[in-house]
Image 1 (tube, one colour):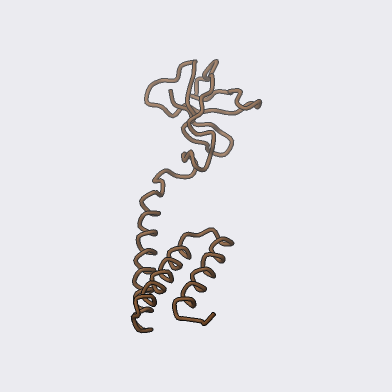
Image 2 (image 1 turned 60 degrees about the horizontal axis):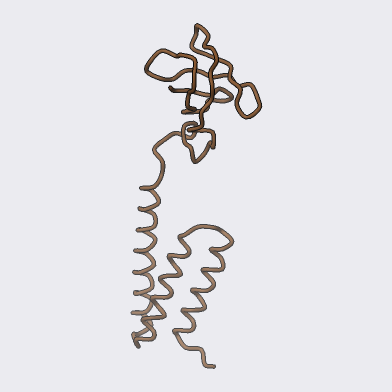
Length: 142
């Protein structure tokens, strides 16, 4: 089998995919997409410089689009209130009694936790939702 320009592009594409599997980023996949476009340009009979231009253009645009999509999905919430960071955010707890200073002790996941009320109304006993975690203190809302 003879080594053609298209084969070289496919080898580069495969190498980028293999390296991406060890790093876990999508950017190398986007560059691999550019290499696949370079292989397509080689199959169409374009010159070497046109193949490189096609690969760079497609790969570069794919990286920019990937970056923009990733930034749009980024949560505007701080880490202490982000359910993607803390699996406890959004879970509910039962508050038996509130202290005068707006704190309480609640049992959650088999342990005693300090809790503070963060809602707009006044704290009342009952079911509350964990909205954030500051250190070892649960921030609750009705």
